[in-house]
Length: 259
Image (tube, rainbow, N blue to C red; front, top):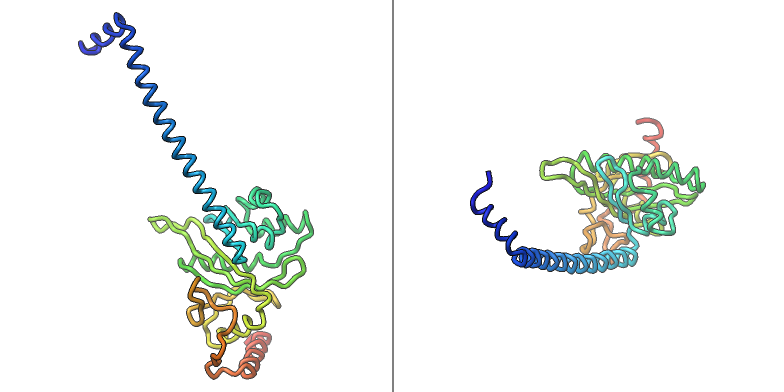
């Protein structure tokens, strides 16, 4: 049943249409003002977002770093242009994003091989390191070696798992540097870590391998990752390269013999 106040209001609007029109006009005015405010906020946010993304893109390009994001099933959500080009062979970013979103490394590598003839041996490496990060639940560092389109590639990667406030795994983010031109030093450093049990083998098959490493033993200060070149004037802490190489050969011989 309608209240007296509601009835009075209806009668007033009926006998005084100007009042109803004025109220409607004021309501529309406030709505238009709010829409204008929201539009300005959106334009400002879009402008800053574009500048932020553009700056990040320029920065990662200058640093020559591969960056990507994956969901809980290790399927791609995003990758920067360098990752798209060097890892999957895409020259145009939006084509890369259209192709990789929702797909795993295995699927993308198979597609690239079938459609473009590009071979890539990193699939078991990515699978092993992604699973390791998820299970460990913390940022991990890796040295990964494989072949892409017939060329040897050595990557130093850092992967961080993402969790909800309820500790539910929702995916990971990662970045990697191409260390191929510094492989002589990098592999020697890796061999030292293997010898001192500071590197964990996740996958190895001939020249393809993946090791989880502990960069806190020798790291750069800016990004907290291990240095790609040795510091001048620093000794190798008594670990002679010749002795290390002999030890490596001994370790590999034992692996070969199944010991």
